[in-house]
Length: 559
Image (tube, rainbow, N blue to C red; front, top):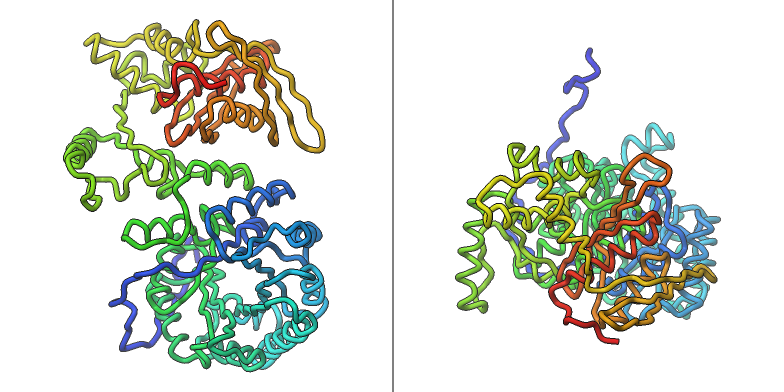
């Protein structure tokens, strides 16, 4: 039999249901959200987050409005243990936020988990064990009763250790890991055994989390599993039913949405879907899907560029340009017919913007998340000497990133329309120089001094503003962050670094470096380019250039 043979994979069996209710339901309010970026997302990174990156991600999650945040696996990681202690000892947990920690159902791990939580005002202790047929038979070598006994014992231990700390408001959570590969009647049996130990009430609920640890079926089958479970589990009125879907089939968001329609109350996931293998359920996408249907997502996602920048900095992973809502190209129209339809719709909206959103090809108003609609006239391979990007790289050594190609192509297109002729290589290069590297820039970088102490970079600079020299200073984690901080103080506006790219202009040892920058300045995006033999200076010049080109700034920045 060939290795690439579909017959090796049996179809996932359907759930025998004759009276499904979930297909007729609509999601009318957001589920409870729990971010697992600092645990499940972190463990899936090539390089796990540093303490500083974890702290930055925590601050973002709190700012976005998450009320439950899984902060780690403190019994398995010294770094996670230290991070939990830092949050507690430095009073960094807001009163309306509850931290969650994960542990296996083993006493030494449970004991260490509770040790990490000493003094916490409230916490969710999330205990799990694997229940699937494959795990029982091939990993643990235990029968149903043996696996159920692990779950029951873990539940008793969690309850016992919690009772020793009566000053903390405890919530218990249990996951039958690999729920999707577990027989439904057995999943109910194990969860009922756990809730018998915990004895929840409608006023003091426990969380039962049903993970699609591996996505094994179409989303409708997962919804059937959730509805069947809700109909058969005991103490349903004393349970917060939670879902944790993975994206092995690319359907994690759809499975979570249908699961909520089937009766789930709560969703675990990560920002941008980072996680094991193909990732966790992307909370950004699901929350924005609700938003696009007139449902309050209960998360503040208006500053999408800041979210993207933080996620990329903390995970060291890129965001796909076609990522729903967040990608750099999702509000960009390349097609002429699309551009025409969008223009007509937007023009009609100018007369009455109070009407419900209804613009061709744009599911939401980009301005709602700090973005704008972009139209791009593509210059094909017959234009100039092979297109703007090709000409700039082949003839002039500039390897323009996609987002700068989009920004610059509008300038070239306008020039082509004005001159009504072919735009040659030298003209394209001249336009690039005038646009991004002018001889008389708005502000000049006179000199700078960088210092570092206690892990924080401090940057002091002199900027030439017309005939005046201005002294500015900023701090941050790296020279770029410090410069952005200094410029925010200088111009009095919020500045987010959206994109950064750099390369050498040649292969020689003394080659100049070129840096490309895209900033979000109070919701307006602006691109800049810097050149220098020093990569740090090239970065600073690019940032200053982007700031200089921002249409939202006055002629002279405030002192």
